Amino acid sequence: MTNLAAYILAVTDVPERVEDAENLQQSLNSLRLFDSVEIVPAIYWKNESSAIDFISKHPDYGFTERYLTACRKGQACCTLSHISLWQNLLNSVHDGAMVFEDDIYVEDSGHLREIAESISRRPDIDWLRIHLHKAFRDEILQSPELDIFVNDPSVYGFAAYYVSRQGAEKLLRNFQTIDNNVDVIVPELGRSNRLTCRTVHKVVVEHHPFDGDVEDLAQRHEIERLQIKLQKSPSTIYSSPCFQPGERLHRMMMIPQQVRQLKEQGYTVLRGVFAQDEIVQARSQILANHALFKNTRSNPSSLHLAGFHRFPELESLHTNLATNEAVLDLLAASVKSGRVRTIGLSDITINRSQNWHKDLLRGKFRHHLGDESTYWNTDDGGVYKALLYLQKGASLKVIEGSHLEQTSLNSDSFSEPTDEARVREIPVEAGDTVIMDIRVSHRGSPEVLFQPSEPVLPPRILISTVSGCVDGKLTKAMEIGNFHRLVDWMERHP
Image (cartoon, rainbow, N blue to C red; front, side, top):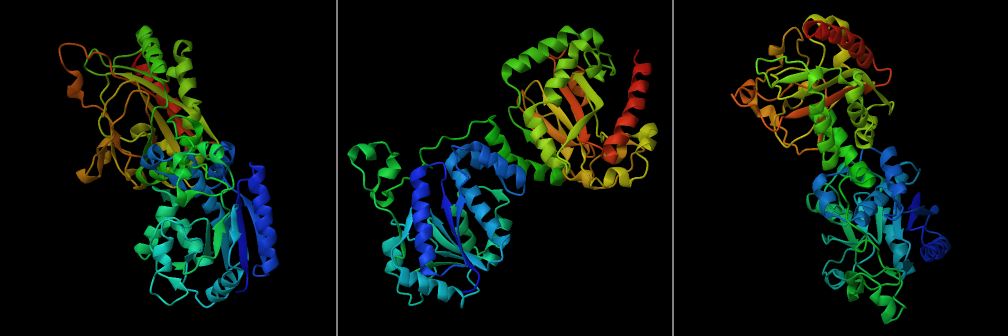
């Protein structure tokens, strides 16, 4: 086969693994099967900065919250390592690549050569399992098929495999939302005919055998002590820790999925952004300064302070929200420039209702937005509101995808839903922060909720601020228009 590469995925943080990788590189070069034999550093879970760096540079690939809650760091980083290899292939001149883990050696060089030659006659194959996992090896070897490549749907097999250029393209398309381990997803793609997968019919490569003693074995995770898992260099995946909500690696691995939600649905939720002691402090700080607030509804317990960042007594609350690392990481990933700034649109509400509306400038302030292309075409990055809830609830409702539909801003009535099936209720816990495109149609609590004769206790408090892409057209227009709207609000509520 012409233009066939070999990639050796190596844990470069471990000297023994580097030595094994270099020995394998020398062995593969001696076979003269490959145009290039490269050692590629793995994204190692113990080096979290490498995972964060990869995700920051490649925001197309993200993990679901469900998966990150259940998986280990090693499993997620393993998936990212293989994604990086597929990208390497597409960025190269090669037609395909064989991928080897660093602790693999070639058991049957003659059959490896036969595989390479056969691949050139099988352009239909997207992915080929070369290493036969011991858990499935006997079944595969006993297959009655005469073809050198058999149709085998078993999981595992990422210690050595072949992937074609078209296979890498298909894999990357199907790994934008990751909800399982890489060695489970690929066979599933094969079973669903989204990827043409095959398996070799002989033992071609093998892990280096275990050469330690009982004491060495005792240091390993119990799974790595099983006979079918026993090898010289144990995987550290099973001994790697689970993700902890709130830690940066966990947040960064969720950002690509959250950015897609923000772009497609108009909102996303960041869970547990603020700790409970911070929530208690914020609530106390707000209620201690309730005299700054204005009553803007018929209910006497309903209070509002627009532009609360102007007041020294409350300015720290704005700083805490606007500069929060989790909020900034998501916003930076959502705009092309990677940089955002606040625009002076900040609010704290207490027991306040709100009907359907958009947070764009509306009514008599709409003209500040200028031409409609300013706010419906935001290729340079949008403008987003961060809403921090100080209590559990589900008062926020949005019309999913409404930020992508041109709607008149002359009246809030144009923001009301015409299809209830698109209305989503957003449940939150105290400390959660909703990030919402300001163009999305949404509403808060109904007025009737705050009409009882007794005051609502404890008060329902919401803190929000708006940020936009630095130098974005909509950012500038909203900042100027909001200044005039804030002046109007202050004149109406002296």
